[in-house]
Length: 449
Image (cartoon, rainbow, N blue to C red; front, side, top):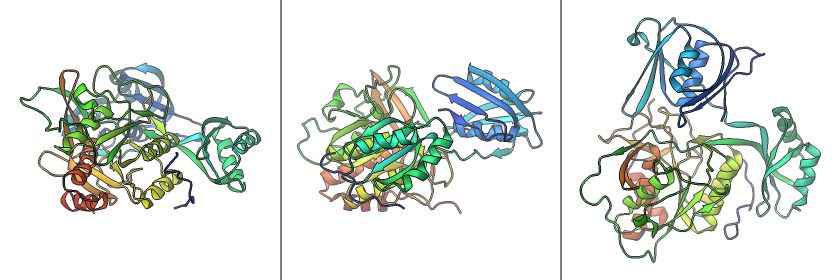
């Protein structure tokens, strides 16, 4: 992995593209589950390619009746999920269900039970085709990036002069690729690579549930005066009053953002989950917002968020992003943070299997998967060789007078981060001792062979 010497200042500082059915086709599918809206522009795609990309876009397990086939050419915008499936599948039938928190789609000609062939999702290309990230060498004049952008025909759409990190946007993918070759030989550039989408941290399930009797948490009512600051790199947070005394002022690296009004935000759920794991010895939590009002962010924003958490004194730092590409710049940042004793705790991901999920799979990260109520690996959870710990995948949180159940590897990750803080505060362990104890006492099952 590429190293970038001394560029971490600790003190200062979608549309989803389908594989084309032919070289002439540029098929696209945009699946917005939260809004129940789907856009599609597909020309001459075969059925299996379509189903692979539906699986990737939705996270569903997709099964098809062996021998079923279709040629799909369709274009529409803002259709509901069910209407979109009818248009996409044509004369084929479908059925949906959910078991153990995993949604399944059955595509068939004769009967749902005939859909027995599992369709493996296409591996997603997270690269933003027309964008590059550039890291200038330490001490380089900040005007250098303006000159480089002009020379390359790029627009600077994100910049951090403090650390010399910039996001360049080009007219097309060819321009971005050509620029990387030019930047690689520029003496003022420390590193350059593509920019990547970072998926939002989406729970497998979030649903309002019946409020249990008694207190949900045994929290210390006194102000926190010692212990670590815990970083929460996530969405906007809207914590209930009883939790706000444990929350530092949020840092927003993407501009003004707002939390949803109809359910607890992801960060709110994670904050409460961490506090629940801290028991009677809560730490202060530093929220850092890296997701705007859209559903995804980029590796540049995620790096800025991690840096902001570090500069605010947070350690450990909780990151439960849904997944991103294997960014060398992000990996180098985490590598240098790890070398300075900063512990990143990250979610393994809600796609079953053993595929590497980033940022969880970077060396030095404490990657966490989820268990089901019986203590076994949850059916939706990744358990690749990079996973270091497993915690309960279901959390109960309170918000706006109601009680909500949140399920996924995100609450498992927040549970582990809170446990680290509890071990430091309650048992007076060092951070490294706490990580070692968690790895031993909360191990994941061996990866499937």
